[in-house]
Length: 338
Ligand SMILES: C[S@@+](CC[C@H](N)C(=O)[O-])C[C@H]1O[C@@H](n2cnc3c(N)ncnc32)[C@H](O)[C@@H]1O
Image (cartoon, rainbow, N blue to C red):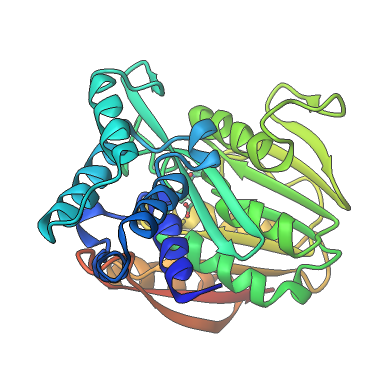
């Protein structure tokens, strides 16, 4: 890949995951454009359009219209600012988006959804239907949290720990960690669980988008509270599991959870369900990724684990910053065993 194409590729990845427009660094792109003659500049701008607003993924799974508008507006303005001719296709795309201003194809009741596509490795993209707000319908589960990115990344690097294993995920949310594990770690089975009805519904849609090209395969078993599909060597299922009232009935080798430690009221049921899940199989191990927001909440989790005689090991510590305007956070992954 040439350096110029590399910059388009980077921009494309950021656009697809709805990276904050104000933080997108357009300098390298504008610098490239300033060195090109007219024809090459038009061709480069056309490639920019095809890699962002007109990307094949965006045709099917678009970010919000307002995001696309703000992105194009900034790109066009920066090109105009150095007195370069703007490719007509960019203006046309922008005008077209303005005419759709009041239409958000993904409005459902009071909630507006968008699609975000995460490019996690050269051959690995995951597209998720999400809400833009961190809390919708009274749940935090309709948004992909930082700890889930960190855990997904860690699982890819530690794929051997998940290969051939039966994996349970608690508080799975929209599925980023699980879909990454299924696509890269070859588990024998992967059971996504959560409690919230809308989260479970959107999670199933996300599984179909990423594992079945968006449609329901004939092999799907629709159960009252879940569903089951095969994907390559992995049996994939979704189940409702409320830590405060349900029990784990099957045995698992590995339990995963991302960003489930945030409310002291649910720490006790969370620890008890972790203990129950680990108790079903000798040597079972849990990996819990937590963003450290409040020391007291985190200490409460650790103390509850200790008082339940669970073995705790700090697996890894990460700093995460989505973009320069976002705060930096600390995320740790703990290994838990009985
Ligand atoms: C902050 S979100 C994290 C979602 C996802 N793991 C991520 O990191 O993007 C917490 C998740 O825990 C789920 N949750 C909260 N309380 C629960 C309970 N009592 N039983 C099961 N899941 C619960 C929520 O529905 C939500 O999906």
